Image 1 (cartoon, chains in turn purple, yellow):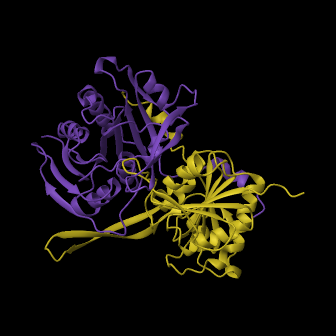
Image 2 (cartoon, chains in turn orange, yellow):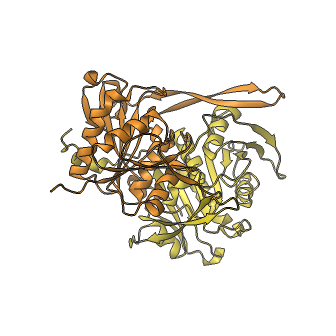
Image 3 (cartoon, chains in turn blue, green):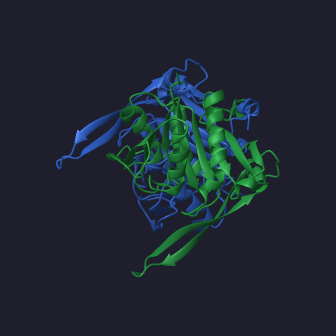
Length: 257
Length: 257
């Protein structure tokens, strides 16, 4: 007699046809029953946006062979999770995995990340959740190098249980499998983007901007995700959606309010 | 000789013409030099979305009389702050205020909030920042009842300094000024939305959904923003953008990774 296989919800922010999510689906098919509910178009840098002033469409489709059930949705990554959990699935998933993102969601990138917003949304709904990201922006990034790590982390999460109200933010260095040194539990590095706007003039003479920027890490700690990734490790940052800066409450209570 | 007046950046997510931001501009004109950089259209529930795959437009305009300088931008609230700080302003603002939002950003709403994402973006850039929200979704909400509180909190923030890497999330109950009992420093309540999708069929026979939901607060603590607001207080939650769940790192280090 076999134990019932876990129900795994798979989503992402690069869209349902992205190679990253296709790899993630392949891996999850080896672990459980897979339902994919993912955006029909790229939703990178959508943060935790949700669709409240417009309608949502959702179609059952089949992008690739395999036992997974797949839905393509018009909304944001957070919308996809809400739709899956509250409308499409007939039972609560045992796990939600998001990604594999084409590009980093380490350090402050977690705030802007559609990949992590989907995982966070699942976490808010009480579902254990993991976001996976590879430090390679290319559409044809080589996800095969990290498959064994994704599987290992997922199985450990199912076996041990993710701590309550915690969502895992997993980032992979762009290395060959045999070059990756291991996995580190980390804190979010205090790094950020120094933006520069590229100002141009369109053919009609109107000015417009492109957002560009340089990533700057002045956090010298050896317990951060940036440190781990630079040293060739996979980073796992446990993240939370209680944003309260508890340590500052006492100080604010001294204000004259 | 008068002390140099602080430079205050004002933004929001309801758009530059919303009554909430117009009230906020009026109040800030009494305190400092005001530059407004706000979205040209409503951006509610945009979370921390930023515009990376499209261009941004920005025009200097004048929506209403007053000494403030105003820019209307095509992007999200976070885009507006990035543009202001890195392109439009010639010095770093002393304070960024966002709002006054038409509707609550208490408890888990902070995650979806465009108002708070703008304030967070300023915080990430090292600028002291406050998001203000009134628990009234109406366009014609009565912001005059809370003007004295907004002014008091802003002056206290400029006088004492907001703790480093902390952004204030201020919510006001929908009450008359003389009914408001005072101001409480709070933690984010552990409350969330129970979603329900309203499924309909369009005139072409295609199904679509509207996201709807009920807000459920099962957090009985008397130190939360929800408690304070229900009791008739203004709530101030200090929030942070280090999402690390530091308390769970030890537990995750017991996993077989």
